[in-house]
Length: 140
Image 1 (cartoon, rainbow, N blue to C red):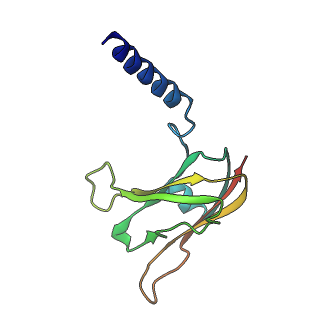
Image 2 (cartoon, rainbow, N blue to C red; image 1 turned 90 degrees about the horizontal axis):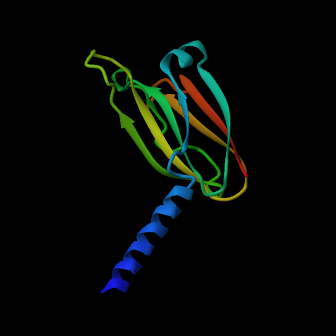
């Protein structure tokens, strides 16, 4: 019985040590606010990540305007995979307040790629490229 508990304890410690070494617990997050997009409609940023790391993009979004960001990031899928995309509502009760759209991605192997997102009205005749976000991703 004692050896069973020692095995469970050793397994638990091993799992905790692996979690402590993980590079994806606190992924790099790139954020762009509404005022930043108002000042510059086309923003480009650069990040460096390690192969296997997750990273997040968080961009201002206001669905009440009829604009939304691209659902899927345009990116080299052999280097980066999109894990999730979600809308986070505003923390304010003010009508028309902006929320955020957040993408979670993972780098797959070393290389360089460009990620592109477009804020647009999705219907025919709607405005395109009102805002754009380009992210240069360097994977080490």
